[in-house]
Image 1 (spheres, rainbow, N blue to C red):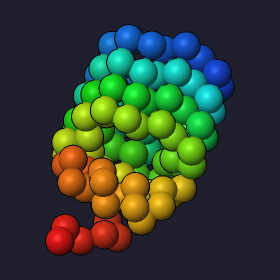
Image 2 (image 1 turned 60 degrees about the vertical axis):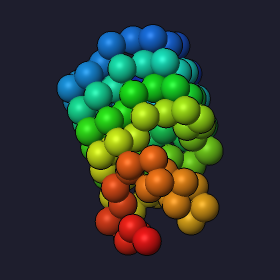
Image 3 (image 1 turned 60 degrees about the horizontal axis):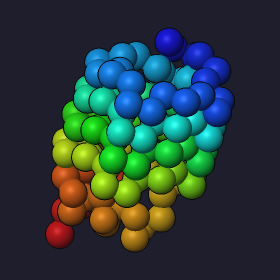
Length: 108
């Protein structure tokens, strides 16, 4: 699904583990409770996407735009966020505590 336009898609509960969605457009997509283990979202645009309670463990989100993304209860263990485009320092710290990895923020 590289480069796919999935704006506003309802992917609730989908099983997308190991899928490749590089450069995909997922603005406003509902991916709550979705299995996204080891998914590749490099360079994807996820503006206002709902990732609440999704499983992003081992995912690659490097270069993804995460502005306004909802991630309450999301499993981010070992998820690679690169520099975390669109995420505030507070959100980055919270995600790091939950196991996320950022290129520009060291674990303290």
